[in-house]
Length: 115
Image (cartoon, rainbow, N blue to C red; front, side, top):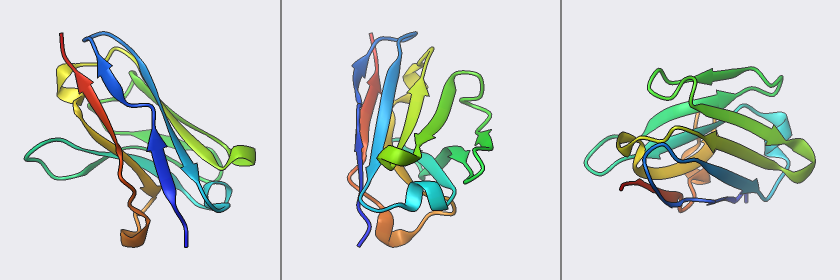
């Protein structure tokens, strides 16, 4: 059973930065495309960044140029560096495979951007 554990969220002021981590229990990080998703209150969950097994990356238009996805295969960990944060980035952030698997969703980590 694969487990994904997200961490690194918190409260940050607009313009600030956070680095999220997603630790996987198995070796899926190196074998599959991975992604970060987020869900804001009252909204559907959306994909904000993906990274392929070949390290190609894609970003949602709302975060392109501000967020960077990366991974460390040796640590089975995926990262999301978030810079120039905006209040509209407030959400619970999750990692999962891309496309996502229903049985891989973890608890997520809360990111709140507010002054």
